[in-house]
Image 1 (cartoon, helix red, strand yellow):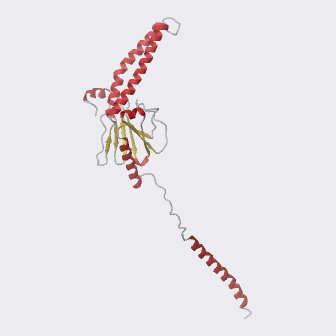
Image 2: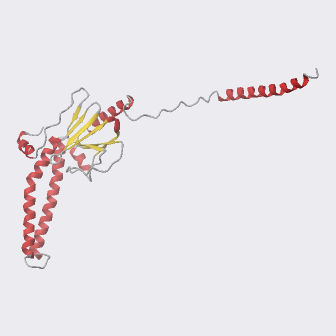
Image 3: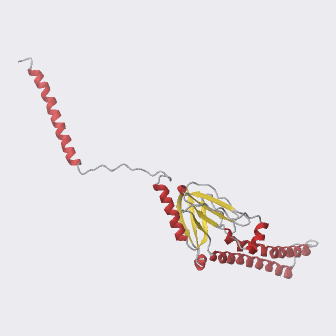
Length: 255
């Protein structure tokens, strides 16, 4: 739950309250680790540093060479744009910091007895539900910076294709596919993976997942030579009997 001092900010963004957690002994709720907040703040700070470098480069260029365009009021327009860029940068600083800070408290990873539910996002809220019967693969992803903060991501993939949903989450990398879900910034990634895989196996064993291929038992070849010999002996007796029958019919009139 978000800190009370940030409640006004959540009301301003009209962020709905925490999700309703199902009741049951099998329900597990996981949250992102505190290290994930530091990880996100570091990434946000690096982006702001890049913006400052770009703004300073523009300021130094205008100071040294003036506007690159040669028309009336070109310098005034260029300096106006530079000032507007600085004002926009300063205005987004507190908003971006608050969004990054409270993001940790608005990530919910809920595992029920039949499905998993992920809810995340501040400015853009995203909820995703996947049934264990459709889950195909569960993997753990961790980059060097995440290892430094002791966190990792758990990636869950379901059956089927589909294009990317174009998530606008600040931590999305190139968009997230509709058939993917991520437990981001957790410090117990292996535990989450094992719990999901165990419930997937339970559904498959109970016949609730994809139908398994039933293979016919392989024939027992240990008795094949004896059976072949018996078949050959039976065939020989039948041939002898068939040859004997015409000779008896041919002798009957003569008698």
